[in-house]
Length: 350
Figure 1 (cartoon, rainbow, N blue to C red):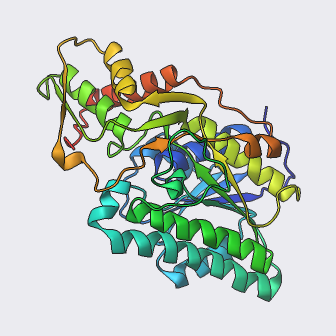
Figure 2 (figure 1 turned 60 degrees about the horizontal axis):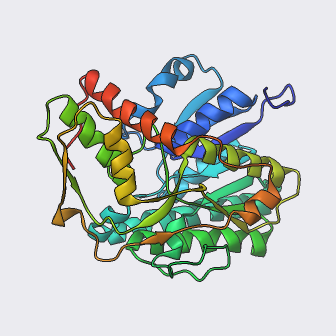
């Protein structure tokens, strides 16, 4: 059932709309609300996750794209003045932890300075004409870094950066809190645990495993899966569940039920050791001769080995819990890669 809205459509700006989570948030908003969607993207980004929406984009059917870069203060200012979205879900980032070891400066600049550019522009416009949208700042469960095993991670758990990416998200997290507390901007911060499902980038563990299985099934790779560190224990949730939580928090913040600068863990409730994820995906394969080997190039200098979360706070704020089972999430992910390969889109072996 669609959420009731006034006749004059309100807008939600989704930065990073071309990503898995951004595109699935756009799907959720278009299917369940009357909001118009403005998707921010860099002009050269891949449209793979949005091709199913290009007809609507071309016909200006409740969704449009705005070409901008987080690191360009002036274009962010122009976008906000022109679009005036009532809601902003800030998802754009350099979001790959392993990549951040090779590109730490880009990661820090994009994620910290980029977020500051967005929030500072909102502050400036709020001072001029009172513009004060509801702003979701997407942090990450990676802020907890190398956490102590055995204790569920709650919102007040001490941060411990375990990669340039996690350090950049610590900065992003604090910026979201600061601009809410200091300037009364209606920000809230989310720290989403490991999430997956269709459209998940192949740089992430479970997606590269599913991709390699699909390549092997198609005869495009030897029956050997290459992996990195398998010692991690973590919860998994479907990104489609997570974006529902994002939107419910946006609504509660609009109603004034979320304090400015508040922060929330959002995590799945099904726990896996990484070898168990491999076993589950292999059980779904048509091939029964696949071996698993460790690839030194896939190891990080430091890993976040333990990610178990306490969802108490998010459940006290919204009526939400994960609904999509991990088995379906992994099955949908594997089928996503099978479909991509069947369409002739042969992914890199990375």
